[in-house]
Image (tube, rainbow, N blue to C red; front, top):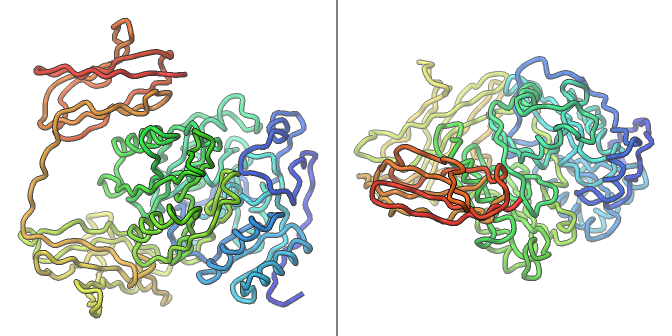
Length: 596
């Protein structure tokens, strides 16, 4: 055996529920046999070996764009098309960090190594092979989740109970934690026995996380996993203790996404930017995705107290069809950050070129690597689903809200606020800036903010620039141990930018309208968009077909500009309803169909 191949040999107790045998190309969704097994008395979950208590200190869930020491994949494919996807992941990721290929046994390990070599991948650099039992390729959902003690101290792994009867998968976190020497904490024992899945969880790295309401359903009364029933506040408390989640945003599940994992249609690009999959109007999951998005935008601000930014990216068709007409659930959102690269699923050139442009514009400086995923997407997963990040052991964590357009009449210099933290302290920090990307970057210090009357640790100033210019900038931090990191991670090829203006003009207000309600027909959270040119008193009500008041959605003063109001269609029987907006001058109505 060649020296660079690292092995972890561990015994494993096999329980009676190994109907999901290793070596099969299991889909991401439950097979019919697994559904029967899950609801039978024979189902026994995988056995944890981690600590069955929350971490002893406050923790912070890692954002996916943070610095990685390794990327995990499982080599479980038995056909070349799936092997080729794994091969391209390894080829690209090994240039950014270690890639750990998890294999069931020595035979699979040898086959994986030989296949990668045959495809021209240099397995002697940054590629490691690990013998660890597993059932499937979907390591995102069952692999270890990274958190940091006290924000930037020790790296811990958190392992939730997996929502599939694949017991070998459910123990992979045990083996990888031993291999990497990372403490493992598990939610396997009551009252913290939480069922959850990695594809249905995204963290902004500073306390806010997103999931679909699947996490509530799978821990509700009658769940087949044998876990104790939990209310939403109890689930929130477990996620706070184990993951450091202080604000847990949950959205309705989608009609055509059978697995209900949010990584199939959305992704956090940073602390304030949401990448959202977009269908043509009225198609497939498009209306519910949009309703969920507007629910988030109307009810939650970024951790900086400002509205979320949204980048929309097409959900491409398959043979001209979308999931509501039998097409595969193609998505460009199911991508993974690997330090300075982003690995993105690709399908057809005519659609892929648009997706690549959107990703590159959203993330300047990142290497956007497209990987053909036509062979895997019918199983309801792509790149994000078959990879799992491992953060570095000593993160130099930098948080900054990029500057908006700055007005010279207001600012003599442009203030840059940031949080920089490292377990050995921050020795120094700088702001690099330029108005000409072909010219050298200039720098100014980003000193510690000593008054300590804000949540920010550092503040500096970019000197005043000419009106009409665009300022490009990034932050560099040096830790007490000499480690240097930038934010964005891709700087100086990647950067933030803002415009400089001399005056600020007020935007034109929109016309007064009751915009189209969506989704319509409705089954769950439904958005009622209202646009008013001025603040105006009025009411927004829902009536049934008999003209009886079903709900007062809003009563008071409508603010000037656009606003979204919400109703939960799940509370009402199927039928025809009418939404009415009434002011002193006018009454507008719109039909709403509710289907259960």
